[in-house]
Image (cartoon, rainbow, N blue to C red; front, side):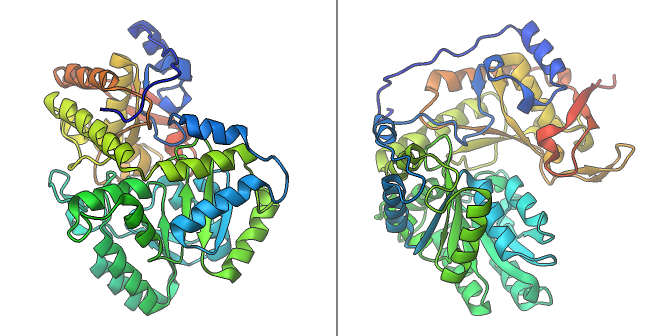
Length: 457
């Protein structure tokens, strides 16, 4: 059962199919542009959408709003330092701000950044510096159906070969994303982290974490990795951070707050350079674009997130939804993680070609049938077409992410998701593809406009 009781409730919108049809047409079939009051179950993201605890709200009320040197900053700094071991902690308003400050300081044009999988904003912030973002997912990640527990790992052989090969001198940093969001929400093992850390040290390359979901990764390690079953999630997390030279974190995930993030660093020279850019673009080093109350709530959330009871319930919610989705006849990336489930839209909708975006088609149908908002992670996100709409590059898989906000929805809400998917799975011939009518040069999935492509009879 949930390890909490509900103190405050908020009504959710319930719309008609006709209203949803009109809404989709109005926003040119881009779900990001829907108004929140047009969405019944919002699984677009788990970023900043969680419910605060009573203790977090109480901490926020005590926030110190001094411009410099607030009590709130020092509480936050102490909490992060105890967790991570990093000597230098710089707050930022969210993860992508932390990425921009770090990469703008660390990278130069022509550099190479290696990762198990870069997520969208991470890749964009790397590429905006003129550097190359290269993914090295482990071979096990290619089998979406296998029950391998650590499909988020980096390919150690590929990492070693790259560091020792002709591109080795270009590698400026290795970033491990835990859990591997772009790779289906799969966890990274401690053994993989240790070996990657050793390779980076051998070649003198900084090793960083994208630590947005560090606690969920730690929980899955305690469930599945030999040698860690008797450890607490907090102990695993502390060990993971200490294998690295630093991290960037969006605390909107495993900080369980609505806004906030940070950069953690061991290198004092790099920290000083990042701090100067932070002050110029985000805010003074003791607030980084955040209110004091945000810093206090973030500190409290980073404490709560490693509680075993909280993490066990989060895993159970994901397992419950996975069961309902499978029962509906829809395949997911196995095994289910914790922050999201990834639907295999390409397999469900084989009649829709990749350049007509089956993942986006399924996401739109979920909204149309049940008022459920989700996110495509397929060829709309990763693909490329020429000026005539012909595919140049397609995503390796056509997925839809159902992200699970923290402490927000109950099992009956997720039952509604399963029932909606069952309805869609029985009538897949009614689901149509899309074409892009306008797009931006980077992160196109956020702002693209689309139109339906009728199915051929």
